[in-house]
Image (cartoon, rainbow, N blue to C red; front, top):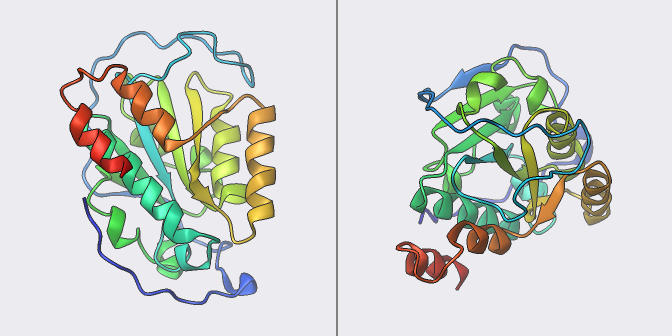
Length: 228
């Protein structure tokens, strides 16, 4: 699993260049659409009414703005990155697509080295909600029914993306331990708000075990190693 260390960089609150000009751009290699089962209807802002357990089939992982100049400013940012890597590595083992976004990479840098090996495509954006950024529809593979979201900041780009997707036909899952904000109070408020509006809040370990379902799964031991 990738483990390249990054050098922390102090980023004052006022200096984070979130507001910036420029179009969104889809980079890295494109994802070829694949046939999938029909997507269940989910009422806008409502609760998911299908099978409650998460499933690897039809799932995708979305890593939000885990970037070189932003991550060092996040409270417990190393934990957030480690849990995101755990989720992404398990996704790779179970053939679950991993996608990423980068907020104004010219100012905030690119995805941290620990995670660069995982995304099959990355969307550069300026919109806080990735769901409204040009190119987002092409980022998510055809047939995706469940999307597991991780990243930062929890109360800005992560929350706005979650809320934006709740009006879609996707089941939206927020991996709380793989998200972060500069102020942990902001993270707590974001998680609470996302839950109030219908997002499912889980831990990365919950996702992994639900994807596996059974200790007899061929990938069980490989995934289990990620939890040590």
